[in-house]
Image 1 (cartoon, rainbow, N blue to C red):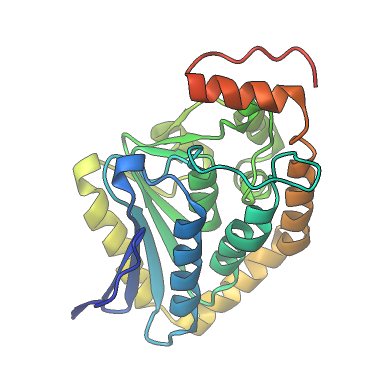
Image 2 (spheres, rainbow, N blue to C red; image 1 turned 180 degrees about the horizontal axis):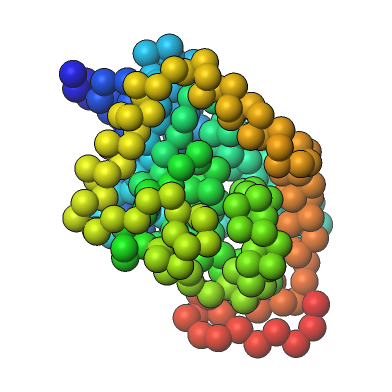
Length: 269
């Protein structure tokens, strides 16, 4: 049975297919880049799905040519009292709660990734329990190119999936990781042809929805506990550490270079 919600948020699309809540990031003209508004809508949808006993699994997808290109740099940053960019408040108030909701919800979450999963888009996929990827998909943590660190829980999730050495490679070099390599490393659970991705994502989520939800919730609880440090304080520390980059000359240069589509010239902190 298919039911489509009658009232849709402006930046995501939500529909129920059987026991699967399908949430589509829907800013295709911007490669589904994150804005605070989209983040709030996604957080509300995830909380509603988590609390709804009729939802037995969640599937997250992206509209258009990409899963999610990361944060939308066209959205101005708020400022701290000293006039420096605020790099922590959106994490603390919107993006980190999304990651925590995905990890804590007592039901499985699947990311179906095509095109770019960059920055916070990569973090979003990593926060899901399982990842299905199209052959064209790429995973990118380009934070280093604007002189900041990856956030949204990307680092702890990557360390758990692929170990510290490969995590350092992705984070410190900021290079694209093709889906096939991501599959071999353990970031991706299933790799499919591009045109097969929608069906593959729905099939996996539907299969999970037919599983015993209490057992799945118990598995998530122990998996989360096995990751080591508690995720919530780690995300809080991550947001605080991210803010230290706001006043550096390297950050100002990185952002300027990104907007001007040129290579940054990092010479001093």
